[in-house]
Length: 292
Image 1 (cartoon, rainbow, N blue to C red):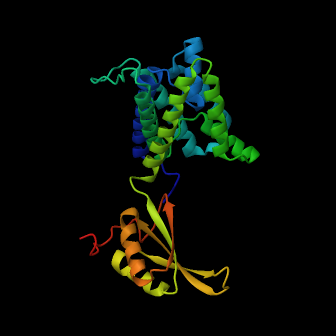
Image 2 (image 1 turned 180 degrees about the vertical axis):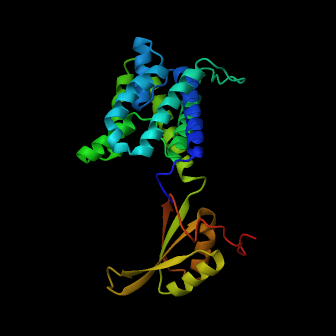
């Protein structure tokens, strides 16, 4: 598959993500005096002190950043970033002038406002990221520093968010900032959910002298692939054969029952797996006796 291929669906979903993000920003964050991280947070600071519409400052701040960082983005990323930036600016402008039939007023309930701000922001950003887009801003800065200075994008993004939120205290009180942090937490969880899907897989590492029998039963009863890993006991120095398998979270109880039936003393390590690709997990499985 050509990773540089441009898809119409990407543009549609990035626009939808920007619509959700912009709606939450206008009708929740701005309406309830909640801050934001990154460039969006800077636009809210400018809005408060200089009374300039964030729809305009979003473009004014992002365009220079994109021009500076275009060489680090690649053609597809550059196109998607410019499109995402313009789409977000448009929807921020639109939602300030167009009202939906329902009213999103939270009656000054700041806890609910924090939850909704995180939900709309996370839903919008999750869709944007999942389909290869960004809205520019600190993502571009982080990418430049990663290429030039070797600083990880995660550290840069966190540092810039902390800086912007600290500056936001110039117009917010501490109570409003605490609810902004609540929104940031919900935001991160929703983004993860959108990007990773509605379930998380489980990785099993099993060490047992009856590894062959356990592996056979996992393959037979759950129709999951297994791999053997050569291991050595740290105390005994004996060679061991560990099993590694990835199953869905709903199959975890069944897998533990299978293992316990064969070897009740087996060592089992259960790992959260965020994403699994390839045959044996993502393909449509034939029904087992447990799923019929």
